Length: 112
Length: 112
Image 1 (cartoon, rainbow over the protein chains, first blue to last red):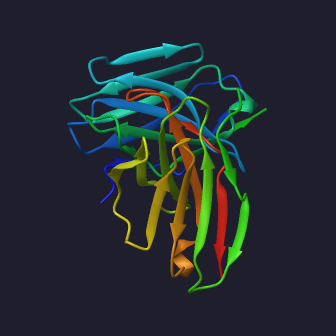
Image 2 (image 1 turned 120 degrees about the vertical axis):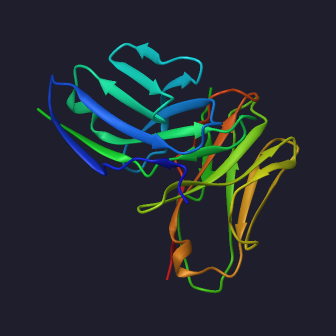
């Protein structure tokens, strides 16, 4: 039973527009969430994170929003660039920071 | 400083064989986690080692095992390989308990 779900396997966005990637989770005890980006033939790289005590974290073009009541988080990329084309994974961390629960990923394609 | 390295990068085995994968963490990182990535399941946590001790374990059968050496290098072993074990195996290292995970490039295992 997946505790972290990314229901959209793919997303296509025009360059310059906003990309919104969504993630849902089931365990209200998660207290830290992360987004990773993965290019083909490479391992995932950390992108941005958010603690459960916050509802928003911003880093340049990337903003993560957390809605604890809905158990939902989203990653906004504004403006989207062709180099952002990759697979994006959201992840949740259990309370002891040892175990990461990952979603199945969303493939983002930013068209020039 | 050098990133996380994994060897080999690609491996082809037949059913019933066993395989050992190696991971060298970033210098100074003492925690190493292993993940399996498949197209349908996303990233699934296998186990985590810290200071030569398995600290956490995912829901994988006993055919999957690992160990960590005093220099923090880690190995993962899969015995009696099955076709379903074909996947990208990623390891990640972390400096401390609430640090970000840095992933290696992965080992692509194909079981025929």
